[in-house]
Image (cartoon, rainbow, N blue to C red; front, side, top):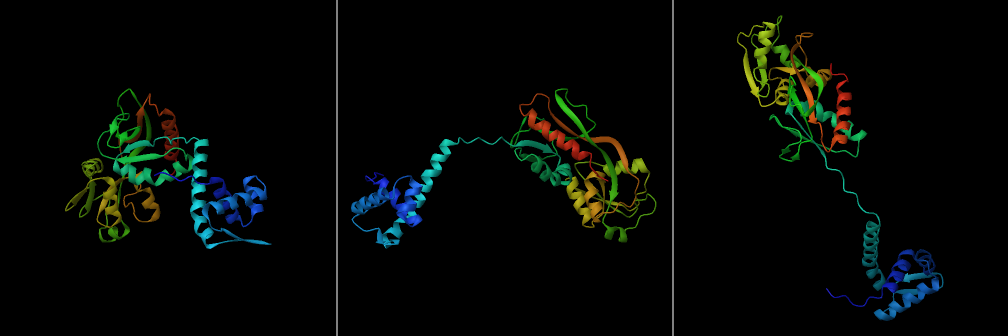
Amino acid sequence: MARRNLPLTGLRAFEAAARLGSFAAAAGELGVTAGAVSQSVRGLETHLQLALFERRPQALIPTPAARSLLPALSMSFDAIDAAVSALRTPSVAPAPPLHIVSPAGFAALWLLPRLDRFHASRPDTTIALSATERLVEPGAGSGDGTTDACIRFGRAGWSASLGCDFLFADRRIPVCSPSYLLTHPVAGRSLANQVLLEALAVPDIWGDWVAWSGAETVNARRLSFGDERLALEAAIGGMGMALADRAFAAAALRAGELVAPFEPIEMVRGTAWYLVYPADSERAGDIAEFRAWLLAECEGDML
């Protein structure tokens, strides 16, 4: 749109005088004399063919026309000032998030509740956390971009091109809600008449427990869930007994939402949780920060 020949000096002088309430205050902001401000405003009034102020001995009173014009001018000059300031201070693009992929149980029950502490200690690094039960290769593309590091469950021994850090051992304990235990009491190690909750992500975990402990399973029945988080939520809800990783159940045990009826018995199968990452990643510095923080968290109390 074509613009008229606007008297910018007069508009700037008027905006400052109307906003600050006097020619003298406007002169101080603009770095000129009060006379120069008054002369510029006079020129603008001549250009517009209308008065913008009632000039009184001790006051400068904006006319209705001036009060109508002032908001648009103030917003425009503020926008110009912001645009010029942005040019003087080149913006720095934020670093992309560090993309971590984890099994759903580890992500929801252990890692996610701790991420606030990571972001508080390292505000310049953002974590993008994805959950999947698939085996994802760090450094490869995923649905949301490149996977920088992964949490894996197993017995290690993966590719020599990957860095691998032990996080904590898989220690399994049966857990249930206090209300469930009242209606389904246990005797010794027996699982007779129990509802056994299991996660499809950890197949036949109760079969391993029975083989390891020799527990009876007369009239026991099983309910299956997609991942360990759902199985543990079902246990908290009183639906049955889950065979949980001790680290995953620690918070609910401390809160009294779960009890471990067979304590101190726990099953250790040689499996564990690991952090894996490319040995030569371009994000090596960010991965090293995340790794150091994660290892420190693993040294904390997990019952």
